Image (cartoon, rainbow, N blue to C red; front, side, top):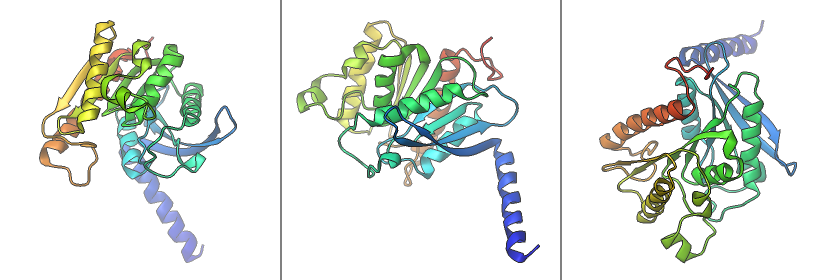
Length: 265
């Protein structure tokens, strides 16, 4: 065996040990959207024998990067089987798009179908965890396929179509809020942008008035993206830990999971 092969074997061994230590396996795949477009996805699988409770992770418009991958890994460490479709790179969309591209909704829905079809996924409605633009995809998907979705966790999410005119952004929520019955947990910092807090707050009241299970968690002294900012304050670090536990509890409750994170019988 030459030096290069030995080095490769050592690296592979180290990676395997890391995956084992974290209790999570990360894989990549490419799936097809309804229009034939290719959708890159990442799959995070917990340790042990499945089946596992399924969660769809929907990233923000900043793209799918290391921070998102770390969040997906954390969810898998909690016991969830996670599929994260990348709705940007497959369509060559640059980071931080202002407008919403409706075609990308097919990519997210393809991720849902792929997740539900995995042989080690519990045969049940899935949970969704979305960041910023991600929860807008989630409410759109819940309005279309509510029977397939058990719960939504929204991290500072859009509750209005980003393409809607200014009066709608200021004074109204997306029409899907008046259609969905999916339980939703909304997580946001009190120092986030005012418009995002206003839209989220209106969505909270609209869902509650209709009897949809909804909860609002606002974190003092926490800014936008409090859970992964490179300049996190001590308060934001605590807020992140609290948010992760609240998200898990919300998914466990509405996905009807046992204390051992096993599928409902």
